[in-house]
Amino acid sequence: MISVFVQFIELLFNILTFAILARVLLSWFPTSPNNKITAILYDVTEPILGPIRKMIPPIGMLDLSAFIAIIALQVLEYIILSGVRMY
Image 1 (cartoon, rainbow, N blue to C red):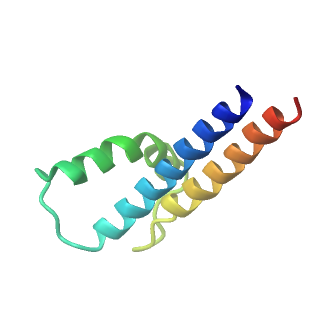
Image 2: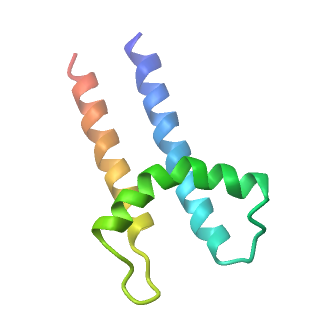
């Protein structure tokens, strides 16, 4: 049962990380706001990136929110899984 939970947590955090990376890559290219993939990526990642962007605004043209979000996701995943693996 625990291994299923561990696999779910790992999959969830991997999907979130890849979604953030995809959003960063898509931000480099002009995309239509009506594009379904872009809309899904924004819907999934904005709840994570928005609060970080409010705390740490972009520095010039450099937005560090994605970098900070990925590090925070990795730390959170480690904390959750280290607590689960103790049992």
